[in-house]
Length: 156
Image 1 (tube, rainbow, N blue to C red):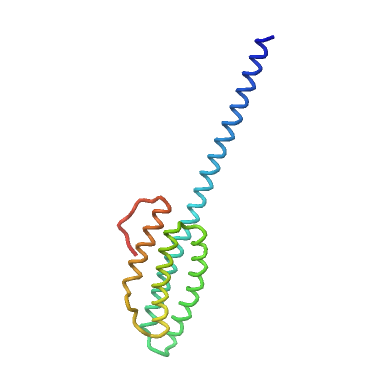
Image 2: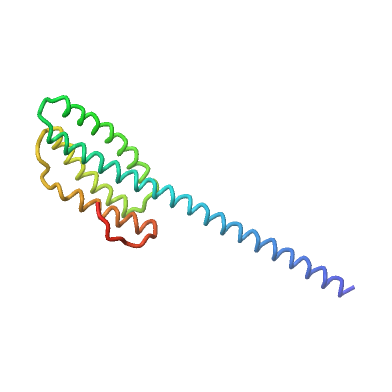
């Protein structure tokens, strides 16, 4: 009788151990899959935001260079405004997904970009045009850190 009880306890203990180990392995696998999905979403958001910033800056430069009162200038300014609306929405996504350091870097990019936009609207020159490029480089570095990607020698 004792041998049967010991055998039964061994079987139950083995089944319980197998159940716990399988459950734990599934939770670890699910966390890994979810982390990969969020990293993909973060990467997309980081890239879309930076692309939109560069688009706005490029259009703002063209608007500043266009003749005052021209149709081309009005079109550039309208394009800039539409891109600014997209950038604003992308920034909100960035705030939800990105690391605090990357969000702070994006805030600095926003401030420099707004200077460029104001200069375009006022048909003036940008006080420090290189600042945006430098701030984008900081943003890229923070994004790489958040994504766990090694540094690269690239730039804006």
